[in-house]
Length: 139
Image (tube, rainbow, N blue to C red):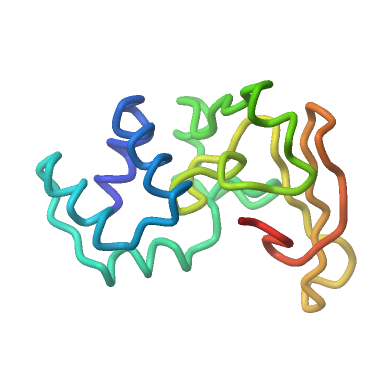
């Protein structure tokens, strides 16, 4: 699964197809089929486990293994004024496939006691800045 995600991060066409699947609310089976088209053997359980992991690009939580992503561009500019101007809260486009490829303009920071689960969601392009749960009203 990790190899498939790394491939998607470096292959714009593959990421676009994953974005289409994610935005359409496709099942994990769709992701498994797409991975197979690209020579990867993953399972529905692999997809569930990857989705359950928190994004490696949260501010203040870089691990040693994430330093390569920072240098190599682990996030991306997903800003599209025609689409993003309609957002008032975090959307799929802000976080990408399995929340592993955050837009450069999106950030989520813990606010107050981390056990309470309150987060500050911000778009640096000015689309939103609000307090909410982990994904708030992510659709």
